[in-house]
Image (cartoon, rainbow, N blue to C red; front, side):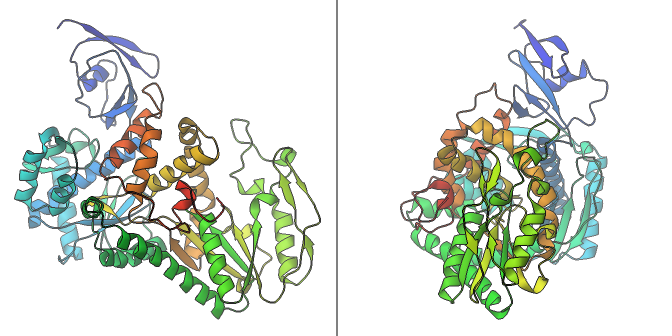
Length: 547
């Protein structure tokens, strides 16, 4: 076929190439150095460099300073880690448990992963990288792939493929070894010039470079404590990976899983209330967490348990303390930025909290979002002996909002879905993806947002979280893990039809396609047995709490 294909680059350059030219060959015609191009976006889909062009295409470069670039780099590093471990110690089980600031913590069950072995693995990884070995992607039939995984004893992947209606699967091969990392990898090991591997807790931490291409300092996090706590419950549930979850769904055996999952949340809430009871001077409960973590339902569930112990919880909405619209700060785009802490009337909020805790009476404002001003409608409040204020919001943990309230009067809670479910040992279900799908489903149903709009807002939401929530996690009294182990199977039914609303012309198509493919790992789950007070009802609807 002598047909010519037109290739457009994002900077406006345009070339013609023969039909079947690989994407990277086209790039090399206009770029002298491609060493920092990890993968390519072709017509809004992230593709392996050797993807063959068969029609006119728009191409952009995937580098480390993008979310797609981080995914490609981190998954490729895992391939190198897998190769190093296998070459040194044979087939060993690896269990990635948490991601903290792009760094991935893993353990090796039933293997003594001491500092010397970690150094051996790191040295072997460097050797593999220095060798610049080609990484090849192959599409194999499920039967062929199963044969490979049976040979290597990879039970997680065998169980996962058993319940999927796919005729084939993609596997990456390098230097005689093979694995599946559910996404695009770099074309050769030499691309991964920056990494680290360090001892960490009971395992090791695999360090990826930041968006600037450099290694950042490693720090411990209380989030890992929450993960390790939930791993104990995962064993009770008997669901080590999505293959086991799919098996339960297939056999219509989910009632016990639902009930135990709800009991896990309720048990933790009871423990929190018991801790509050011990500290009789608590007058202000502050609840913060990233978008779609389940703060609203959690606050109401906590209120129920507080009332059972004699407290009278009074909810204060931080939304009523926004500055007047004329005083609201704006972002670089000239639009109002409601994510910033200084979008709130900090002085007024501080004054009201201090007066209430000191036994004084205040008139609470109600913010009129239509005209952008606070109104006072005679809603006065004086705290009685058993009253406790419950404040939920993105900035609730920021000390600037309660700097005049003594620490002994405050109880700080961080809530987030810190997922513990694995696709296999090397691939954990993403907490960020979990939150995005929650938000997309909820906002489409209750706020009239298009899917495009949810994607459009998500980048700024995440930036706001990194600046205004995450820095205060280590100083909280408790972390509440709002993840639900069966949640992806529920979200599959609600989210996949919405993701299909984006066509290839959308700049978010690649991300929608990735999430759609991710949900294909799960069998759909029927939802009628999920209790009406479940946290997941905040997002899928038909719950008993206000959303």
